[in-house]
Length: 75
Image (cartoon, rainbow, N blue to C red; front, side):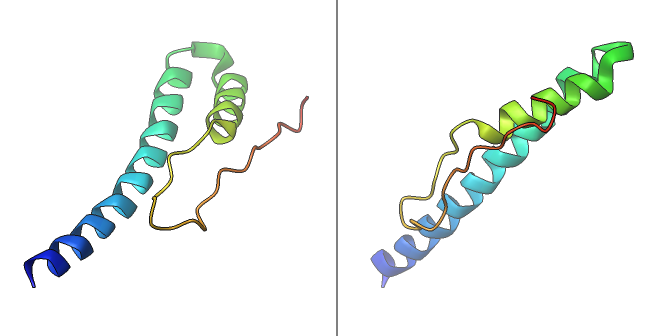
């Protein structure tokens, strides 16, 4: 019983960790863009594209979570 409960909790924590990492990535990008002043919008656009196309951590138990590169429309 204890191992089953630990297994379920571990899987849920793994899924939460993936979501947390993705949220953190965008919050860091926004904070960096916020500090740029007058070029804020352009910097945020570039940072969002960079962050979105960077490799994502995945939940080992869920192979359906894949990282897909995102290209900027201004390139």
